[in-house]
Image (tube, rainbow, N blue to C red; front, side, top):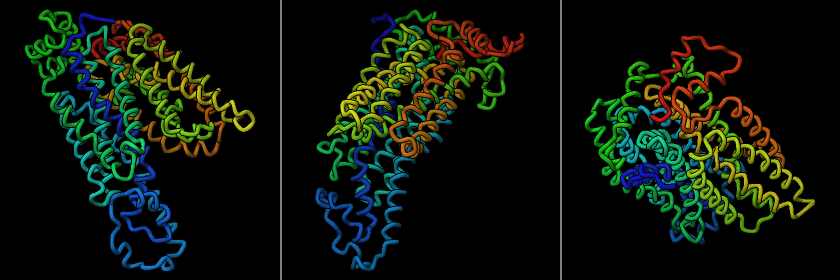
Length: 525
């Protein structure tokens, strides 16, 4: 649909901002494709004993790097190494690879608490510029990993990139939500998730062995994000600062109006300024809110618990099990070239996220979330049925494959994009930074837990694993049905009333009702 509020400046600014979200997705996916090659290079750099050299034959055949003239001066023969040393070296490599993957999530979890604070301290634009310096450092470390101790460069580069993504996961939804017109808030908010899945897809394509996922070019693929960091930094100089930040935090009304006029493409910004003034009044009454206060204050407890539940539903639905292990799932389903099927999942992921951008302002947040979760519930059941009966009925592989594609489609219609911007709609200027930081941390933590535990869960449950996820999805679907209010097109008073109504088993007194008034209007997100 077209809207007079969609201006060139707004489009340019939002696209510039979500380049950070694109990097988030790229960093999630980039490490998966070249895993075996990077592990082989670690062995090569660490001078693994000759007994273990078979593991890197592919690397030495394909690599243009020359092997050292005297690779193992202290250990000239294979017989000087016993089995214990071989096992120890394999354990070391496994540990280094695990650190290469998990350091990203650890960096993200730590940094997620600082996104809101950095945005409030420096402003949204300067905060993104500072974050880009981290992205650049991380990219350069990984890009240069072939020139030095590659395992140290990759692990530290991934940790710094994770720190960048942790900041961005709070900064981008905050900035986009604050510059978006009320009628486009949901659609523009969904672009954060669209950019993430697009980044994942691009990393999957570049990871093909004939593009960059090979022994010669894998470090280039890891370091490519330096180009994006430089590009976004240059573009940010042409983006207007958040009018809400300028007026509410800095009390610079003239600059706020100037920023609004650029974003709206007109001189009459009275309506927006009235909304921002109203929010400033409410923010001055409620003052800044700490993370502890989100749980101790009766006015914030229900919204923050619902916000965290939405992020838990997103992460524990089983979607990351599919993203991380789709190749092995497709192998189990009998697909000859599973890497292309995985890229197919990435394409479906992107298409349906784009579809949700248009649906979210028409169908509503809660409705789309429930539709998505219900669809995922049935897909998870069919997926497990297909995998269980695969040995008896070969055509079941098609059932499993179809279920995977539909599962991803339903995820991106609702549970994928909606939690990121719905949290901002629950809270006003005072509690919003703390709420976004906590929600972002919750998302990272759940992501880390599921990535760490899924191989063990899969090993225990085997082909029945998605029955477990179906049960989890069903529980969250019921909780969302009873606890989550619809925020589409609603005023603050209506959202606050919805939360009071859905707070089962307790009647709120006048004081709580008054406190709820200071949550902040949803259209201020």
